[in-house]
Image (tube, rainbow, N blue to C red):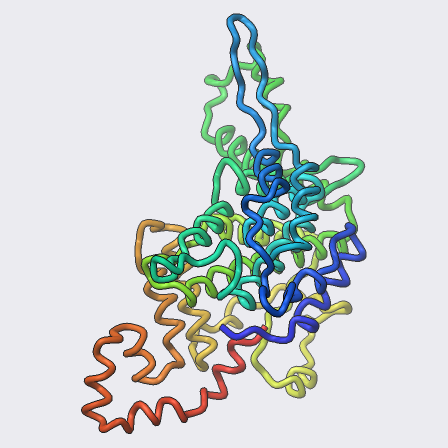
Length: 408
């Protein structure tokens, strides 16, 4: 996929950064470090890099005779301090991920969105020279890079930390995360499936039940905060989801099918967070306005009675959402939906990888597709076509519609 003008792409997110938490200057972190080394040196064996990795691991519980030394968690302040230094000296996927985990644990979702935005730019703009480097001795094997991305899907690491990140913070009611929502939903399901005579209320059961906040308590927290705060959270989660989706798509484009990596676990968690926050907005009477492919003039001329001040609308009628595919962009979105289904319901299926590869080939000519799928057959095809097909492929401009669909 092509990169667009990042000065305009990230303008909204950049302004939001300054309004919330103090973050590094994004523009300075996406500049080439030198003409000779765009991504700077590989600092994997630098002392600061080693300290960053050690601080992120913490220590496990240990027992010496009858003495038990409790486990200590990661020192995220130290991780962030090291990563802050490394971000200015190298362009490394690992540093971006560690920085994201540190700020996610220290500050919440703001820092994680920033790190995924940074990682997205790295993958889009610096792929040939990005760290960790491709293995030149093994046909540019990208395993080191894909292993870095797998860190985003670690159930005991980043996924757990993302699930524990606060989605709402009410002074009166409390702070709640997606993990709290999961516990509340589980408790509600268990309560509804249990018979009254099976419940024990005299053996500590009451105290255990009361320690888990219910969905009504979590929703009360969303009711207590300003609508604008919930909207900002929804925007933050949605943009993070977009970054992760584009990272996966761009990496799939740059590596062969054998090395493609699925980020479905973190994408699905972000989608779940997005849907829950949207439900809280709907509860407050705020509904998202769906994107439209209509020209701006036509959209501006529409007078829908459901549209309210501030870009919010009443719930749309069920018949308004059509499933027709009218454009290439519609087809690509439909394929995305198919991939999402299989990744959520049949994670072992190879179909998502094949479909995403098909998406990448959708705009290519026959010769370009042949080069991608069967390079050895290209010479035979060119021989049969007398070289005309090859020259035609090289001189034909890309379809205009694809230019639009690759935009941000």
